[in-house]
Length: 73
Image 1 (cartoon, rainbow, N blue to C red):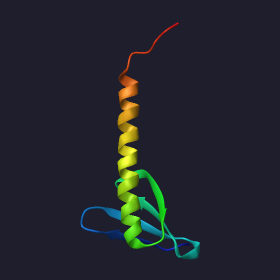
Image 2: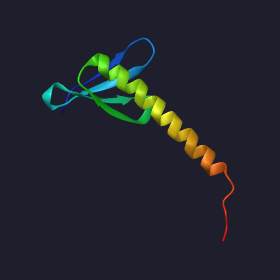
Image 3: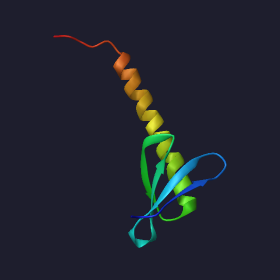
Image 4: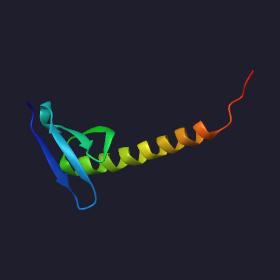
């Protein structure tokens, strides 16, 4: 079983999963949909924040579209 490590920068908690080639898979306990990959711990936090922002924008867009009246033929 691959090792995993919980790490925080004081703002966000991420879980790093050891991958082949010295890379890390990234997940966040507060958002199970967030999955990314990085080559260093510093990059993991950057990727986690970027992926979190992208997911938030996508969710907001989907919510807005779901509230829009549908056209019927």
